[in-house]
Image (tube, rainbow, N blue to C red; front, top):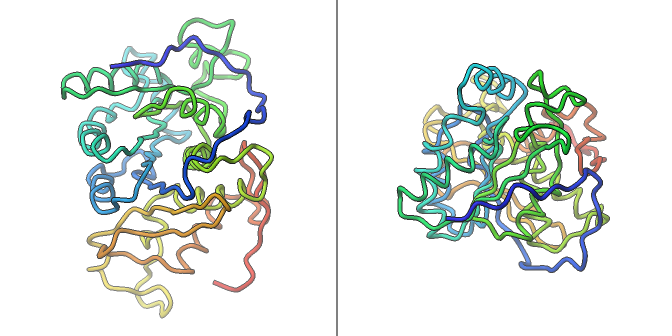
Length: 306
């Protein structure tokens, strides 16, 4: 078992990567969870059915769940997602066998605590893994400064949205099997492995924009594959209830040139189409023409109607 040391501190200024290497011509990134109450069995099905996967991202944190974890930790409970052991006990064995890296924000308020929980789990399963941690810190605060950075308001359960850079740093320096984070922008969780594997730099704006678009499509899980799309009686949004019985979580194939192809598991239910992608593209972006993330502002427009 290896826990990546926690004492390494980087400031929030993103520096250009030094001679980034292209490790793959295309990378396959899957969404294993799109919200805190998502289903680990769906993630396992994606892992089992899509053998090309290189990464699976568990996006399980939002403002509400972050505040919940803060309140629980203040009363002596766990500051990380209490289901992290349930999720990883189901996914770790197959992920290690397939050489799929797991990235998740289930660290919430206490990523180091989640790291220890996962290492203990791996030990009980007889698995040798490396777990890296990327989280907000304060040089002047106590050890768990995610909680106590008063200047950032974290002492009230709030946190800064981190971008993809600290995850890329973990991937580049530690080659982990699992990366645990605190509050990271949803899309950044997916963008990080693209940047790392495809040799992109932080001034490759066109490629980063394409990667961010793919990441936003993936981040809400089954919303992309028909979970929010069905509307009985609507000629354009009606499909059978049977198709909802086996919704596949989505994944994306992204090339080093920034070409994106999204997919779902072969033979699964749901629906993946221009319309489901357009619906998700407009979801939670504020200004659809300027999607703001910590990594860049993705400017775009939709040229044809839904």
